Amino acid sequence: MSEKQTQTDFDVIQIGYGPVSKVSALLLDRLGWRVGVFERFGEFYPLPRAVCIDHEIFRDLHAAGLGQVADKATDPAPAYRWMNAEWQELLTIDWTQGSVSGGTEVNFVHQPTFELSLHAEALRRPRISLNFEHEYLGLTQHADHVEVRVRDTATGRESRHTARYVIGIDGANSRVREQLGIGRTDLGFEADWLVVDFALKEGLTWRDLGIVECGQWCNPKRPTTIVPGGTGDGRVYRRWEFMRLPHESREDMARPEKVRELLGDWIKPEQGDLVRHAVYTFRSLVADEWRCGRVLLAGDAAHLMPPFMGQGMCAGLRDVWNLGWKLDRVLAGRADEALLDSYQPERRPHVIKIMEASMFLGSIICIPDEGKAAERDAMFLSGDPPAMAPFPILTDGFLARDASGAVMAPAGELGPHGTARLRRRTDRFDRLIPPNFTLLLDGGLNGGIDADALSPAGRAVLEGLGAQIVEVRGKTEARDDQIADTQGQILPFMRARGVAALVVRPDFYLFGGAKDATGLEAVLADLGRQAQAFGLLDSRFAATSRQAEPA
Image (cartoon, rainbow, N blue to C red):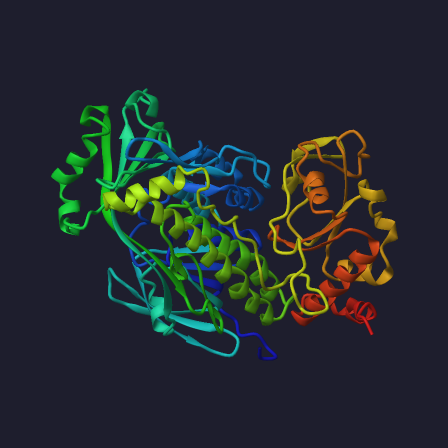
């Protein structure tokens, strides 16, 4: 960076205005930054695409001040059932069970309602500049800023705008990614599916249709997805997805009469309104580079995955949640640009693992051959079916490590969250304790760790990061100045992992954990070393933190 920062039009420019871009702009605005959004269309896409928001994203939205938006557009998900042609259950993913975030695992979302609420919120924020009908042409990177060229599609007039950073959130066919020459790795999944959204007549529910509430019908004669489409505008939506069979063309699948034929087995025209239908090619693609200087990729521009885990939009929102706190500190001069280098190592492997899980589920349903489907059924009904991999955690990046450099558990896990009490107020934990570097201490496990026992060096690291120290106790033992774990989410999480301390990052992922005071001092020393390398540690405390380094 030059000695004197160039004055720019915006702090961050975002190319594209899908749901991930909307949330990113609102998050950066909340953190105090000027955001310029450039979208080549005259308005954002008004029809549904994504239907799932998982517990982590639901929690992130609440922490970003968008809880009312999330609550309005979502409904808790039922169990996700996979049946064969005879409706025998092959696999069930119980989305109704509690999550580490304190709610159900998944919520179904009506995307148009979600995006309209986000857009209305963006219009109220003076630091967000929305520029529709502005087509991205290219960019030029300079030492301390980026210049973006756009064209007004209504007038043909070209203009240039500057920002300190640019985020390409412009979809699967990202022009930003293509202009930067960034390639993509194909994990090998490809299948065409017809996606149909239907709004039910007022008063109707899935029970009235006599269908499964949420599931995959793994029938080789027509693999079919049947899931909720969320609730919006006072209406209940349903989604069907039909796999294209080998003898059919994409054009065949898109014909209105074909749509009516396929829907005819499930719902009658008089039971509601057909909202839209489109043929999609489900693929598994991930960008090879997620950062090029001052330009970063997020959302579908960085990754494209099959929909069977309901993680497409979630993964994009996870991208900008990871980026948000890092850009905030870099823009404020409280971190070096090197902190942004941790974005790809943290997000790319995580996304690939989710893609692989989605591909595993896709391999179960995408079988149009009856003989192979029979083999699959036998395998899943044998009593020893293949197991899904657990949901991934972070495996690289800004995480606690041992002397060999290996990441130490529970680093990389998503930290616990739930309803808690502080000073006689009961609320969501993230409302009581705002997102930041946070040290959670359990005083009950084997005597626990008391905040007074922290060494000067360990305390200096926490102070240098502006970290919060939070003591957690059971709901009947907590003093007014301690967090009472009223939902029983935090302490059981810690005790299951045998730790009495957790260092939580601003994005709720764990930097590390420790079972005793000695282990905590080692974790805090490592936190200090890594924070200093990223320029995160206030210079007043850097020298003190170095005293904690081992000889």
